[in-house]
Length: 207
Length: 209
Image (cartoon, rainbow over the protein chains, first blue to last red):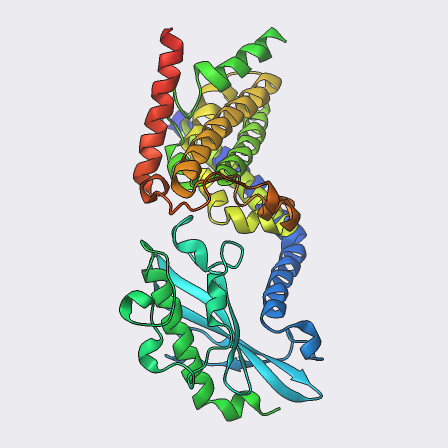
């Protein structure tokens, strides 16, 4: 009796192990087959964003490779080291692109790239990843609306601290009613990013 | 042939997963904020269902009954991950549009339901078609519901098609009202429930005629 049970249990267990092994083998081989195309397509997506922020004819270095690593900073909201991309022309840094995290989106973090030039003006902002409500808070994406271009050419000198807010809060920025938490988060993180660039100007712009 | 026809009729109408079996409501309600979103997730689900049915059916005699559910889940999860990798690697724009929804196909009960109730008992060919037509039936419901919510919520149809077909396709998008401020309820989750209820009512109405 006991022997029969044991036989049954072990054959079931062996079947489960075999199925798991086959599935793991299939998964790992697909992981290796698709790994480099996935990296490539991520890199391509990033490069498209970088080129939207700084036109490719303004710099002559390899933007994706020319980076400095920055440790976690409250102003940027990053929890791990992040890369800051530097656009150079004739070995002079003309602009930097900083990855920032807005922790207080409607549903979680919003990651953006902020391009800042030597005069501390914003060249452009693009959202890389977010989890905002589709069809509602996703107008921050360049594919969905032009809203994110509101930041172009803004700077700390031109707009006082109070005006870095949506119009509802007495600021300078448009928003879509029903979705104000999302733009608030991005405006705040972009403002802090400009503060960071101002404080660390030497480090960022010395080639 | 007539068997496949019967399977197709079941999938699209009699046993439609979206409005009759009411399985797979999680993506039905979450993703259908626009017609294109609904259609793309529907097609991805149909592919997963066809492939998982077709791969469970030939090995159904080797799966011990006691552990069939974990084995089915294992197979479905592996297939979804493989599809997720492939879309990420080769169709980046679609990946951007569907993003987090592809892994969610695993949690869609309709996939497991068809494997358990059909593929585990039937031949490979008919299992494949069962998965395909059930998936396409669901895709049809998702597209209709997405279209309905997009029309009322944003006043457009087919928005986001440029993410799949490239920027030149953006002029296919249909704008119905010049200056439409949007009807928030249709975009938010309640709109999904109300829209689905309307679709079910419509189907029942046609059937009782």
